[in-house]
Every structure is written in C-alpha cells, then in structure tokens.
Length: 128
Image (cartoon, rainbow, N blue to C red; front, side):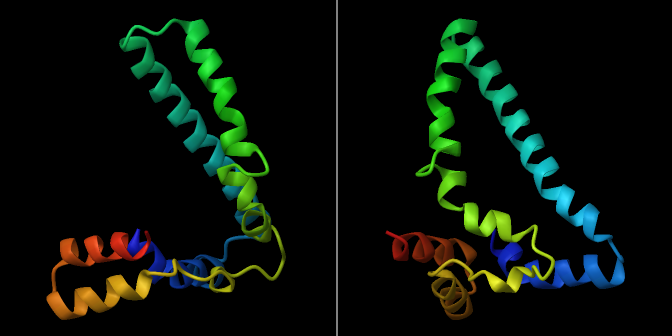
C-alpha cells in the first residue's frame, strides 16, 4: 500500500510518457481491472461460503444484500465516485488526489525507528 502511494505518480508518468500508452487504453484499464477484481472476489467468496455449507440460494442472497454496500451512494464505490470518474478525464494525473491523511505518520515513524511494523501500527492508530 505504501509503495503504491509513493510511486503512483512516477508509475503513471512512465506509463504515459515512456510506455506511450494510448489514452483509450488507460481509460479502459480501470473498468477492466475493477471487473476482474470484483469477479475474482465474488468467485472466491462463493467458493468459501459453499465450503462452509451455505447453499447457492443463500450465497446469492448475501451477494444481493452486499451490492448497495459497494455500489450505493454511501457504498465504497459510491462514496468515491468523484475520484473514480476523474480517471476518465483527459487531464487526469494521480497527483490530483491526496495521499491518505496519516501517511506522514508512517513515513516519520519509519524514519525514526527503521521498523515498518512499528510504522504501520502508528499509521493505523493515527487513523482511528
């Protein structure tokens, strides 16, 4: 997670400028990656629930109940729709979005202790 925050701008610049990735490919990558992650998560969750003895009907019911928690206006994707849709703008760059508020806590504790575990614990404490 932290590596992603540190290197997201550089990775994007490499993709855009060095890799010369076309605009259409960048724009289609997000929905494809999102659909892939959701499909994989759904498949694995279904498999685990079936292994625990849940019926297909029970699994389907849980899926339907969870849809608003993901896609609803107050759901994970719904609350972040402004950031998600900014990906499709012509002038998009990841630097337009702030990093996690307590990220500096992790950086400072890591610099002080040289211990990523302590830095991560401080990060999570700061987020509560």
